[in-house]
Length: 76
Image (cartoon, rainbow, N blue to C red; front, side, top):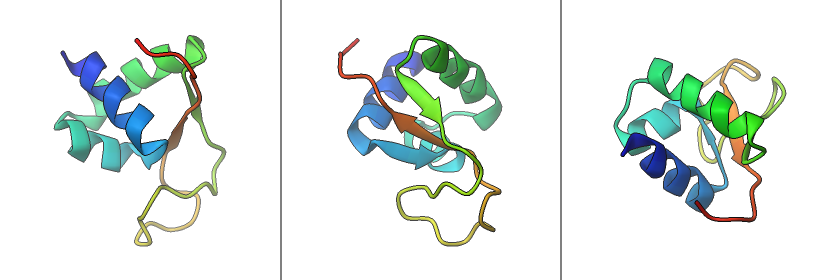
């Protein structure tokens, strides 16, 4: 299930851009936004303010990437 893959990927990485997450779980970024929003409302994920950096990307202009950070201490 996609939500489970998203959960596992972000929990393992800690922080990643929407693009990195989409590549990592092999899903459309548009579909992931809704799931990330749900996880954000549950307190598992937080979207970092513009200017945040993903784990390894240096190609995007500063502040243009959507970056999410895992912040839940519990598992599924």
